Amino acid sequence: NAGVTQTPKFQVLKTGQSMTLQCAQDMNHNSMYWYRQDPGMGLRLIYYSASEGTTDKGEVPNGYNVSRLNKREFSLRLESAAPSQTSVYFCASSDFSGASSYNEQFFGPGTRLTVL
Amino acid sequence: SQQGEEDPQALSIQEGENATMNCSYKTSINNLQWYRQNSGRGLVHLILIRSNEREKHSGRLRVTLDTSKKSSSLLITASRAADTASYFCATDSQRNFGNEKLTFGTGTRLTIIP
Image (cartoon, rainbow over all chains, first blue to last red; front, side, top):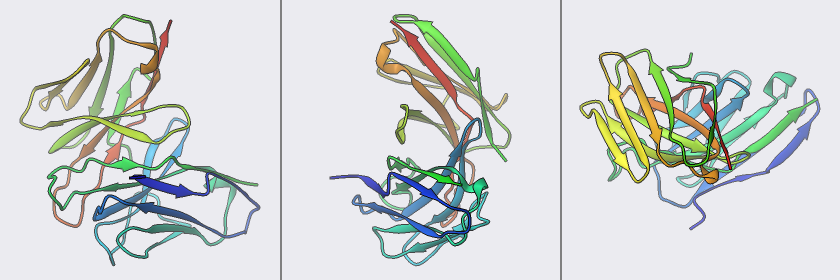
């Protein structure tokens, strides 16, 4: 049982390049989330998916797109990277609509992205 | 915008002492959670307290919630070096199905000095 996995762990991009961050969970959770973490800012929600086939914007969605490929996988795409997107990105999942009534989230190890 | 703000931003104490950190939030909540983040790692859920609860214990953790003041505190007793981490509060203010989101605070960086 791996929990939430993310790839890659580290990435360096040049301004304007594109890339996709991958996330997968093996806990059969319905909900999945993408956050970014910047110094002094805590975690900010980029996009989330309450169930397979649905996605919604969070607090800071500009410059990002997401795909909920299936129940297990939720990817985050940067179409044209900018230095302002330098951050640590975390994927999380929760069983909010399942047996648990509470949105306890399980986090992946993060992807550290630098945009030059 | 951040729902929660932790106080202090940083805290250093001697091993064995108790550590207290506080969280304030802005809007009415249903639940409040605390998470820990070790350096370079993802967040790990510690404890959840519901809005109708005032205090909750889990091992060396004690959480209180004062909904009238919109604040919560996390107490770690008998601190250990392994407690060195950042601690975040998170609120779940919307419970409508399909709109489950947590809003995280800015965190308290706790350092335990051996």
